[in-house]
Amino acid sequence: LESAANYIRVITHAINLSQKRLERGLSVRQLSELSGVSRATITRIENSDCNPTIEPLCKLVGALGITLNDLIPCDQMQQ
Image (cartoon, rainbow, N blue to C red; front, side):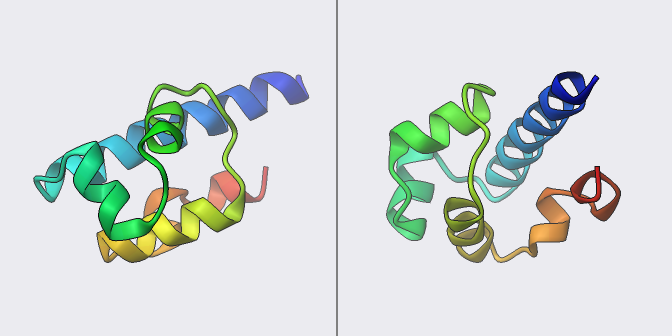
């Protein structure tokens, strides 16, 4: 059950990151340049291929001009 909850969080990160990036009209390359997070890492997050640590997430939300809660709603952070 824990692995299922973790999978849901990873998918949510991916969907939210991609959505927020596209809302701002940014390519993966542009977000990488703005955030300092590699294109490979952004792509892995967006493809749900990894469970990112807080460091790249903080860099990404800073570059997108959003909060961590905008990317990962509080109810999911507590799971």
